[in-house]
Amino acid sequence: MAAHATSDEVHDANVRYHDLAAVHYDAKWGIDYGARGQSQVTGKLRKALGEPLLPHFGRGLEIGAGTGYFGLNLAHAGVIGEYVATDISSGMLDKLGDSARRLELDIHTACCDATRLPFSDGSFDIVFGHAVLHHLPDLDASLAEMRRVLRPGGAIAFCGEPSHLGDRLAEIPKRAGYKISPAWRALMRASPAVHGGYHEAPEEALLEQVVDVHAFTPGALTAAGHAAGFDRVRVRGEELAASLFGWANRALEATAEPSDVPRLWQSYAYHGYIALQAVDRALLEPRLPATVFYNLLLSARAPD
Image (cartoon, rainbow, N blue to C red; front, side):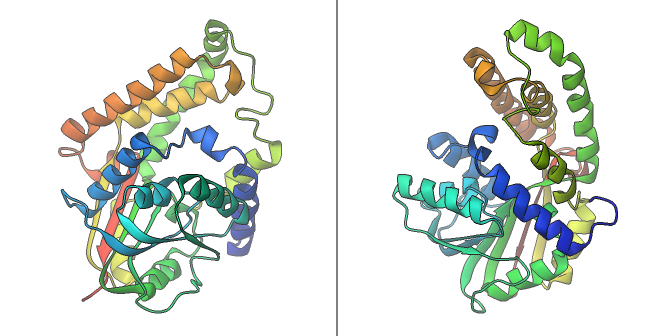
């Protein structure tokens, strides 16, 4: 979090940043709503919940839905019946709505803060999100609101939250990527990016330094879940080798004009990432403590 930034300043920065980012967000992160995207999302949710087979959730609420990567894929895969998406960015929700119409999904949206959810008590079977908790200035109040709107026995599941140590480890491949980027661009015959990658405006790059409020330890996330009144709180780690590989490639790609990055490189980066995800799942995640991984996954249940 930027030094001396207040909660209101962080909130306003998040709104502005995500409104700006909405224009190119899906392209920047390679978001997919087909079989590939559904497989990634359902795999993450299954891992977070610790269930070999995902149950069907009649009504689901996504916090910080962005352009819909997580929730639209879950709805499209039939994991969630009625999907309600919330975000503080109207720009993100507009993009989500466009994608929902293309996918012919009937969804509901609400532009609101996570600390003031406009829903009745006990009205959802699951509350979930991806890479959102670290943006919330008041995590405790947000978790309390999520518990309020969950039915008894309902679940929360949050994936893609940066770990404190994993965030530091990610700086290593990022710095390495930026250092060798001139040679990489020459090899790829790619022009330097106009605004630092994916046509990000200078204002967006500046706001990015404010919007990331937290990097978590597993203990801190566990304690926050218990403090909000949840049962069966569990935190798992996800992605180490894949994360290091992915951030190195992201750092390289961010220095080039997107249209100049060859398809052969894009294929290598994607398939290499997927292969290392498999290594993480099979060898590293079952054996290493959650704290060393880049992503943390939080799940819990509302008391019955």
